[in-house]
Each structure stands twice: as structure tokens, then as C-alpha cells.
Length: 261
Image (cartoon, rainbow, N blue to C red; front, side, top):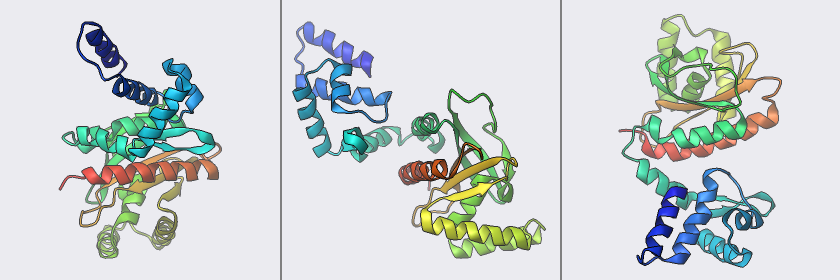
């Protein structure tokens, strides 16, 4: 967006009318492309605008729902800004529409975020965004895994309505894939999902991997998509799990609006 703002300034200098307040508001929003939360003083420093001007612009943007208050007097993009962005992305496949925010969460949590699609009793990873600080590649796009052997698979099971879940259990049981112990653990995970909105798993893809998954659930739609992320259980502790669960819930709520019919 910075280049576009510069071009706007050049056009104005060439005699094309420019609405300065709108241009300044866009300059404010442009700063959130690189930082998730910012305070008024930071915005003034980054934009070169006077603090009273920044305050008035931010107040207006908050009234419009484009910005919202965060902790410690800081601000973040609000639902209005996200809705505009997703409207622009609505013609893209779900895996591409979700990529920018998946990458943001991956960088914020220093992890990898995946989007998986259910095909029968298998999940296929169709998108993956990784923090630049990670040294390993992990799962690749196109990788498939049995639904009971992956965090995304457990998230999908938890998101199914009871009748759909029982039908899947019957199929898995007939295939010899669903032991009584696994079913008991799944039912515990489902209860936790109903309480906190995400599924936590440990040791599915790797003995030391703790993961969080959230299905893309939308009334009247089949539950076929799931977001997940995780990390080594030493670093990915209870606080990190709760934070990841909260961020994935937010993203799942947005992406669920774009689940294909």
C-alpha cells in the first residue's frame, strides 16, 4: 500500500485533487500491514503525522469499526477492515484467501499454521504458512494423513455434528482404525472443544508435538476444513496453547464465511 500512497501524493502534486484526510487515514492503516498492534505515539512516529491528527484519525477509524482497541492503550485492525479485505479475496480459493492471516498468526506465534481438507477418512493439507524463524519445513502442501493420526483430523471430528461423528466412527471402526482407547480420548477432546472452542492434541504427528486445531464450522455447511498449528511441547505450553486456540478461533470464524458450497 505504501507505493500506492506515494503515487497518490505524486498525482496530487501534479494537480489531481487529493482528499488529505482520507490519504492520512490510509497511511495510518498501512502501518498495520507490518505490525499487529500499535499505539498512538508509535503511529505518529511511523507516519510523521502530529499526535492530535493521529488521535482524531484513529478515533474516526474506531467509530467505523476499521480499528479497535487492544491491550495497554494500543490498537489493532477491527472487523470492518478484515471484512473489506475478505470481500476483496472472496473470489479466491479458500486456501489462498486465508493465506495472509495464516502467515500473520504463524509469525506472531513463531509456528506453522496449516489448513486441511477432509476427504473421507483422510485429511489433505492444502495450505501451510510458516514463521521465518523456523528452521524446519514439516508438513508440505499436498501431504495426506489418516484423520485419526493428525491434529487437523481431530479438529474435524470435534466439529462434526453428533450424527455425522457417529457415522464416521462406524466407518473407522469397520476399518479397524478406531480402538476403544482412541475413541475415549476423542470424546475427551470433543468435550474440551465444546468448552474452549479448540482441540488440543499431543504426540499425534511426533511424540513431542503439541498442537491446536479449530474446524471451520458454519451452520448448514458440512465440516470439511480445519486450521491447526503446534510446536515442541517444551515451548508450546499451556499459555501458548490458549493463545494459539484464541487466534485460530478468530481466523476460523472469518474463513468459515468463505467455505465453498
